[in-house]
Length: 558
Image (cartoon, rainbow, N blue to C red; front, top):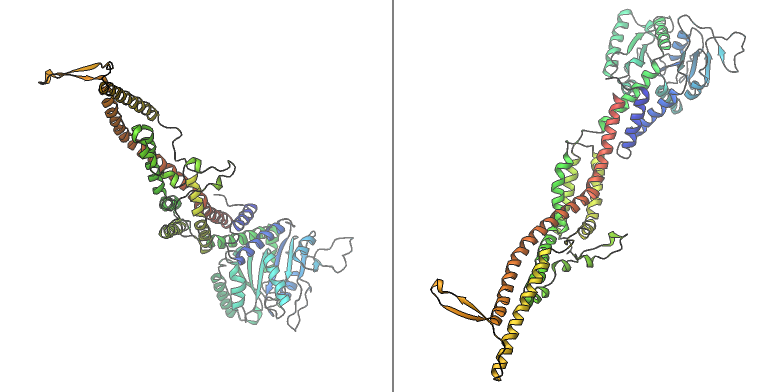
């Protein structure tokens, strides 16, 4: 797989920092942004020049090494310390002014004369020493251990911006802890842009030089810079100077040090950001935790109470519509379960553009249920954020705490907004209702007929016509008898009406269970939507930001 280019790494690191804003350590964020800014600034400056910085402690001989490499007395070593307050640049080739302005190096020596052109004020022109090609900017930095804070700050700023770092050490302080812990170890992984020059080897014997160089290579490798070039030089005698000069000349010729340094910086901070991103949570953890969360929210929403009310209300409505008309008042007299909870549609009249104003009359959630809801939300957050860094876990928990506070109102609105009643009454209700009234009418006609006949008989008036129905039971061992039609109408209407009401009650119970089942599914869908909006999405936003941070950091670190 092809490694990302510098622009891709830069954009990825910037994206990672944006995704981790407020979650990543401030120092890490500042460091990453600094690398992104330096990379873009350096990318817009001269690609023809390689900036090599001579860095080191007080007395290490940086200035002497600069003079030896340049083969000219550019820097004046002094007896008093610190000797270097401002960086000094030896420049081979033209066109580096803007780059040096960015580096904030006012003292400059152009090493290649331009025929027929006078040097600018304050700029010295020198001849090019053998082996140095155009394109090199060699800096002599202030001492990194200077007692003057301002000097140290300048040195550290240039250490960050240089393309190639040449650390000049001496036999007495090459193992100094401050050098290795503060400067070399942070450069771990960037051995190709680090050179360690052991100066003053002329003070050592050959055996001592070999021993010190071997120990220095070991220390440098322990700093994470295995492969960094370590060589012995003597600015006084010129020993090793040609090798160092050739190394610098080769770096300037290849023009790869700047890209290598910037890539190394991006990779290093990208690895730190990726490490801060922790481990990815288990796959589909949110889906597995969703069921328990919705179950708890259903309890908090009073779904069981609502479903039971729907079932009871459906049976009551069916009895009113299909029961025996004479006894329907008993069903009407019973309190409507849905209306008692404020769940009838006409009880929830709110403006069409303000559905959030809808409220039910459901009883306040019991403390035990509220506690179970809070536990379910926290459990969901813990499962979804398993393996995530503490900062993201705490942020997700904050989202969960906010959700716990909003859930009672959101769940009440969800119940109020769920369709609990049928769009229209079942057709069989209307059919049975008509039949019940017809049967009642038949019973009333029969009773009136019998009543009038009784009155006429009492006053010995001519009787009403009284047709009969002959019932033949001879086949069953009985006889035959006549039943007056008024009696058939009265008894038949009453018995048939009661029987029809009884059958309708059973059918209504089945219909009520089915309606309750449909309402339960709708309520669960509504509660699931609340869980999605109030809990899952806010927590998912944190996890998506973490995933973006982790993935983008991996690109920068690749």
